[in-house]
Length: 362
Ligand SMILES: *Cc1c(COP(=O)(O)O)cnc(C)c1O
Image 1 (spheres, rainbow, N blue to C red):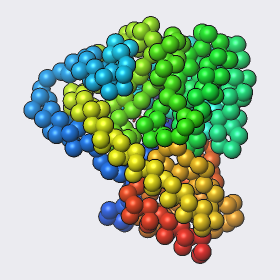
Image 2 (cartoon, rainbow, N blue to C red):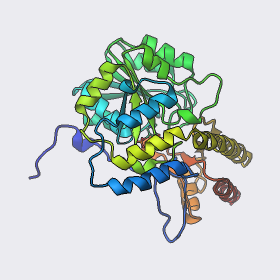
Image 3 (cartoon, rainbow, N blue to C red):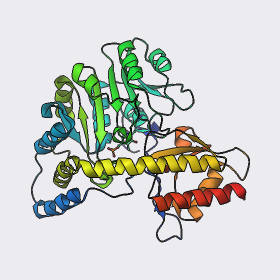
């Protein structure tokens, strides 16, 4: 008989990343993981290459230079930042440090899948608050949280829906939560947003001791391969995360490339600009062929399909894959009638629109 893990662990369905291959196709277009189609900053690439001379050395376990660079660019305090092996790791560490079996964790209905994994790993109970039009609902989140939620996870903007909560809504959420409930605002796509009523929760995390913001180098900085994320919170929370993280959780090439990437605000802004144009085009053109597209503040769009045989999301996914276009089916998110399409380069997006035009006409 195999050695048994803690109760609940075997109920976890391992996270299934976006597909990378289309059978029989040599160079498929991968639009399944919200990666940056423009690559990464050339400065980050050069720093990564220089780091190859130091692979025998342990990294600085506190990633001090990286925290200082982030603090300088974002106007934060370096000793209130912790870095992680992707923001995924930081989310997992929050679960490890703050959750006990049976604790209540709250997310919105179509919240990022990792929140479920965090809750299940700790044996916590996950409650999903219903959304309206694929958008988180503050009242529903507050009702789900009640008096005893330990952690509330909100991705802002959210993946896979692309919708966001306004600054006022995030404040109303925080003010309505119990004081001993940790609010995690996952801002993986924050740098893409340029909307008047959107606000980062970094100032909230500065002013309070019950709120943490996570960011990532995987999206706008185009460094998903290196696994690098960071979080900003009150020193009491950062201290907790520093106790439970591995002593060298962020590797040396990631630190070096991260310092260069965060300083290259020109690459960041160019990526954001390109993305805004391409998301707007994709949204407009897919709507033009009769598809329902949820308005997106991220670097991807949520596209809805009919339930009629031959016209479903699964049919569209197969059709696209045969043409070497890889997108993300959302069955694990309980969105079986939708596909998530990352905004690629202009040429990739033209291919998506052309293929879906044929699909809809067929
Ligand atoms: C991509 C993504 C992340 C980032 O994960 P990393 O581990 O930093 O690569 C975090 N949250 C959401 C909502 C995401 O979509």
